[in-house]
Length: 304
Image 1 (cartoon, helix red, strand yellow):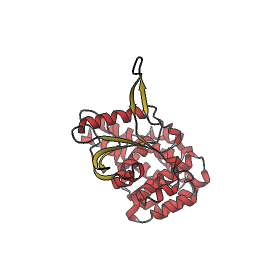
Image 2 (tube, rainbow, N blue to C red):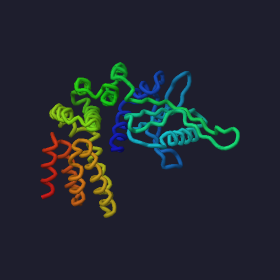
Image 3 (tube, rainbow, N blue to C red):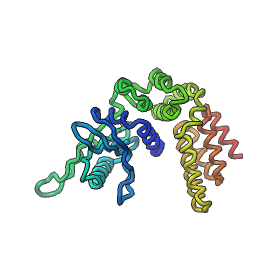
Image 4 (cartoon, one colour):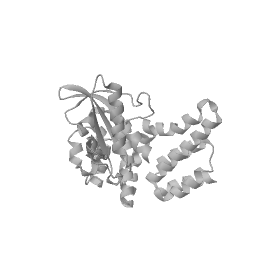
């Protein structure tokens, strides 16, 4: 599910970078986003941005972590050095980690490297560390940014129906469809992780009337187009194969998130489908399925 979390985070940041600055670095003011692909490298930080605070401009790099990464602190250090090197004549750099789930085993600041001899401590790297599961729902609500609402179920006590209901209620309306789609994905992921089947069924029913919103969401369209874009590049056979593989992966991740019990069936089925358009149709049906039984029937229909 890594790229689902990453894509969702990137989408929310692009909608309102200031919201995330208010969360991870209160007092800083957003100026502009910086390009994510760093010069002379394939490395891509999540959300480097130029900000103003404490009397000067500087770079704030916000990284999001939703899965275990034992080298996260080292990777952030690498990003900070690369950003500093690229902008060293203009701006200093600060790094902040937005950690979503406790199971990710977040590396605590500071990162310290030691070596034999003296001085024993060679490197000390400090960074901001926001652990979402330690925050209260009110911590996000008082910031009054709609783009932070999808994180409510990840907060302490936030995975309750009343909180999720308030979140979806605030995101009702076509103008918020992108954020609402992400909020639904996050809430269902949390309920699934907690093995709360009743809450998952309630959430699916609650979201039933918002299916059109999900269908029209640019994030959904982006996921849907991911495999197609790779597969249709100049009609090359290799590109088509990559597109089919990418679409199979997207389908598996959606099923793992919404209907975990159908994962094995889905994995078996998608390997038999080599037509990109057919995989697209299956993905649409699975995203819009109202419950596991409907999703199962959709899978069986495609197996025939």
